[in-house]
Length: 44
Length: 243
Image 1 (cartoon, each protein chain N blue to C red):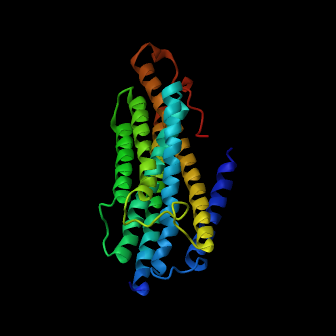
Image 2 (tube, rainbow over the protein chains, first blue to last red; image 1 turned 180 degrees about the vertical axis):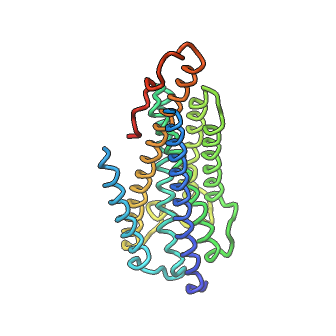
């Protein structure tokens, strides 16, 4: 194994981890925005 | 409670940053694998956190089946969803570690296969909850969650009882680890557990808000359709923001 070559796998794993969490948090924000819109429409 | 959320968010951010620093710069380098071994500091705590969330999902599902408690049902849904996110991290970081170390991305090893099955069970749990319109959905989902939870000990103990390509457990089960590595591992687990709590809390608030909006929408439909035409829309109880 080439330790210098393996560093890119370390970066890939850490980036993938935060990408997955980021996408999930983004989906929560989108769902919250949609619900706020629905709530606003109810008042009309 | 409203002030506790930003405090937890700040503590979690600091913990995650410190745990990242320790994982990259402080933990000693493993002799044979080199830097790629540091994936372990994200992979293992994510797995433990997913197991913890699935355990809470099991408890909440049992409470729901016994008491028909709506909050327990919401907790079950939230922990199932966040648990799937952490399990996804495990299934993505594992092959990224395996490629340089084993020379392959994936093998149908018992630990890997049972983890994939666990992920599929909880994804099916979420699909059931998302698309089923039946009033029986929470009950069916709770039963499915109990079956899903049975796979957790199978995943965890598979490397104790079967011959496997996966590394042996670092705590118990005959495995050993440098104390400095163990410190960084536990620190990352603490950070990811706080992060899971924070995200679950946000998701729980979102779920309660969603139920409140759906209730108000149903009530409005009734008012519009039926005799409630004379009742003002302002009487619809929709004053609360999510807690």
